[in-house]
Length: 174
Length: 247
Image (cartoon, rainbow over all chains, first blue to last red; front, top):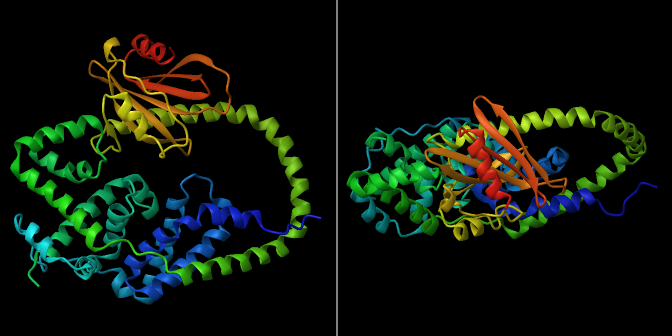
């Protein structure tokens, strides 16, 4: 007598969470750095989110789903490529401070997509995550902090350092 | 703030995360300091380069399809598992409902206290240099539309500059796990946060006063909205703003 012909839980999940599949894939793609791993991560994260959907109370479905995607990404990254998960960017090795006036010219040179994406790929994964959520997904510091599970101050310092590193990479002659 | 302190805030400024008072201070400094202006321009140039040359990846169509199929399988498996549970759950729900009614009063009182706590914490946080998220304008016709699409209700926004309570701007904040509107007013040097959120109870109430850690808090309900005004301003003057808002 309680059998339902279609699951209202599933339709609610499809309505609230699936619209954020593009954002989920974008985040996973930048953390994992290849298509196949990103697809695996998003599929796993979507199933995981569905299983835990009852625990979703808030209104920000995007931030909730993205936090599951990022946790899944980092779990896979640590399991499959532990050496990458702990890479730190050596600012000295990469040339120190970005020369102030070289930036404009460097960005003109960086015409093709591959250059900027390749520069982002050189950052440590936590920095890639922060930069993507801020610059491409336009999330607030508070949302990014909630997703990454760190204080806002950490997000601010990752953004400042991540951007400086990108400027250093992009201002180096090819 | 001096040059070094401003430099620390340039990212937050560029990201629109500074509150009004600090954003204005940064703007003033930028007019005078070429070095900081250069840094701020770099941040913006980098943002433009990422948007243009490293646009967001989009989920491939086959991934979307696979996920939908996997979810449907999962949902069917769940239903089979859950059927006997539902019968038990129905009984449990009745028991919980009875218990819930008994607990309601107690919970409501402690929840009110928790909200006052959060209101005060939000106010204090909004005064720190690192806080955040603002539409900087004294124009009610700029502030009000800014909230469109950010919250699912339309707050009333008025400037009371002629009454000595100029509107400084607006901000999104969190209260009781929900996104709420924060309107920022100023009385002489005292900032005032007014939090607005839809009310579950539509009856208008008069403002009731509380004090927490030296801050005055007035809360009331009007036109199906709950309001909290919080400030270090004295209660009598804070009430003047409340009267203006209730007009």
